[in-house]
Image (cartoon, rainbow, N blue to C red; front, side, top):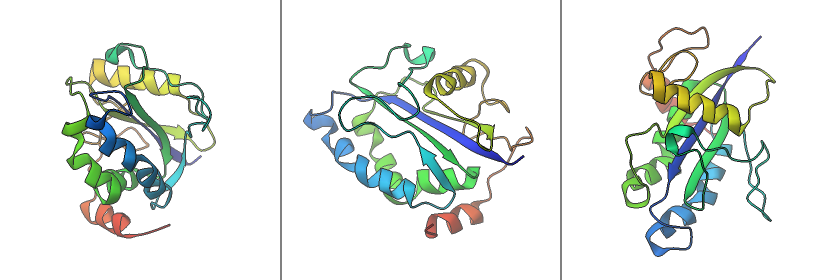
Length: 176
């Protein structure tokens, strides 16, 4: 059975949404979501309701390493991808790559994991609780086949993996 890459990002903004200090981040969110959806290898993401803070893959669950409590300063995503190069192409290029260059202006940096990836079987549901558990596992053990960072990824067979830079560049240039 084919595997897909589940991927969660998690962080705390320096201020509540609506504060001028983080407005640049807030204004970029729709464009970054659109860029993800147009990215090579993107499959799906948890979408936030327009009427309340709920998400399509369940309520946001904060990793214990981040305090275990989501709040008004929480910024988090949960998505599903074909492969590691697709995530890297999206994360470090285009609209998201531009935002990454400015992240120090908007986010608290505690030395905690800010993203985690793990492999799931095709069609296997993912939710925020499993994502938070994976981030805690990454925090406790470092990169393992069960929960890893883009700096030390693992392939779907559980082997250490080296990103293919040419494939990342190719995916960054491609549109779905």
